Figure 1 (tube, rainbow, N blue to C red):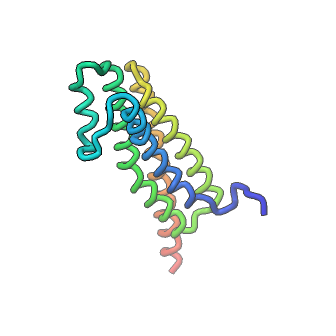
Figure 2: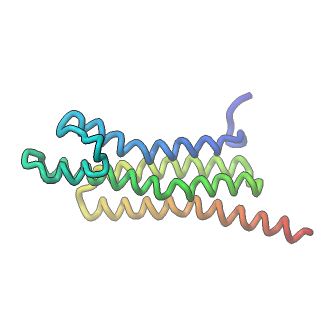
Figure 3: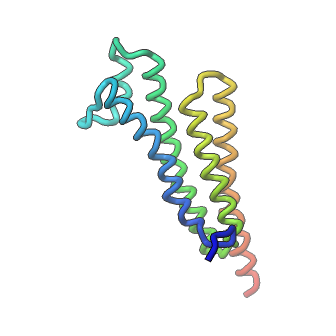
Length: 157
């Protein structure tokens, strides 16, 4: 059977979005192992520790902070996405709708991470914020579509 927009694939977006949230902290970990060392006893203190090291370039420390920020933002948004996907399935939204939103959200989160991690200007930070709010509209739209569909079903009884 060929895979089309009508194939039920949206649940696969949950691990994909988790990966977009996990990637930045993993990239920071790998980079730290190669440059400053990684303190696994106090993993959340690593970025702050690196800022205090005199031989570490400020740009490297700032990049680590942005990698942390991208990771935290992804983890903060993950539950909303999971809820939206589950609500869409419970409400019976079409696979086409769910898949389009899933691909768009994954793409937006990847772009968001790229801009966040690499930003160095006000314009780039504004682009990051725009991508964030554009991405945020997707799970919220799925939740509203799901609520509307369930309300219409309930109104029939």
